[in-house]
Image (cartoon, rainbow, N blue to C red; front, side, top):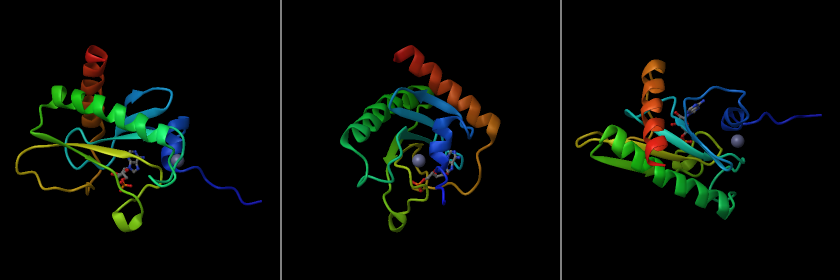
Length: 142
Ligand code: AMP
Ligand code: ZN
């Protein structure tokens, strides 16, 4: 009988694949993007698998947005960027590459090119350190 492999983000949720975790609660998980566009690029996902905005239930979308807001505040405090992009792609034609709903949070500074996908893998120690800085602010500010 054919089995369907869980997607990479479901594997992260299950603890079967690694991530630099920034935040977790009952419904959501946030972790550093493996191919960051810039310092602090992270993803917020619902723990439940939904392919995109068309499949996701309203509670999952609202939970992701609420946590994105909290983490955006923490990113602002931790990294003091000039701005933060909050982006979400649906369907390959829109640029989606991982088909488990997710929100990108991308700190940007004046003059940074607007890009949604990084070209090279983030440096593991750097990503771990940034995740720790963001977690520290979330612990402090809630
Ligand atoms: P999207 O194009 O919106 O589907 O973005 C998917 C994002 O997931 C890209 O920015 C990838 O760099 C990122 N990504 C893919 N696999 C992983 C992983 N194992 N851990 C963290 N980020 C990942
Ligand atoms: Zn999934």
